Image (cartoon, rainbow, N blue to C red; front, side, top):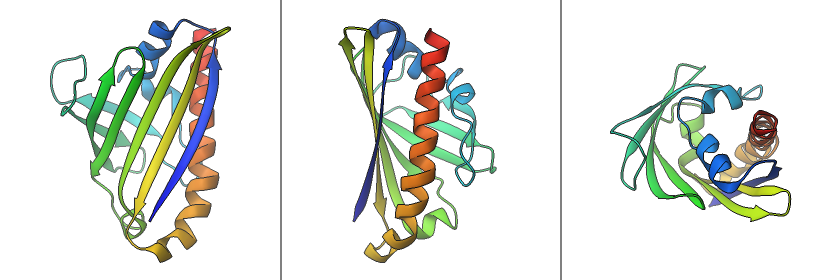
Length: 156
């Protein structure tokens, strides 16, 4: 079973500038402070020379002292950024989530750039949805929306 979340925003900048900001490992932590039960991102480390490419790993260090390993699945400048979280889930998250993936889609719009951010969580068991859905649906979606708003303010 899986749970898919979505957040979207209009960014007041061109598609290249928006894509560059959203995928900048050095700046991403300033836009993702977490939300109550969702930890803030403190640091993102590329495991290889930039720019990211399919197969490259990134280490995402979080405020709760966890470190999630992400594998870049697609990095198509300036239209798509797709990654899979492949390792680093610890209890209680690991009791509910087996794997997750994020997909950012960028397209030009009349006011700048439209961004769609999807997060899909693959659950360990269908019953895990009883707890995962409220936690992810409320808190993670709010963190995603906050992140996009902060990026938009930075681009303004």
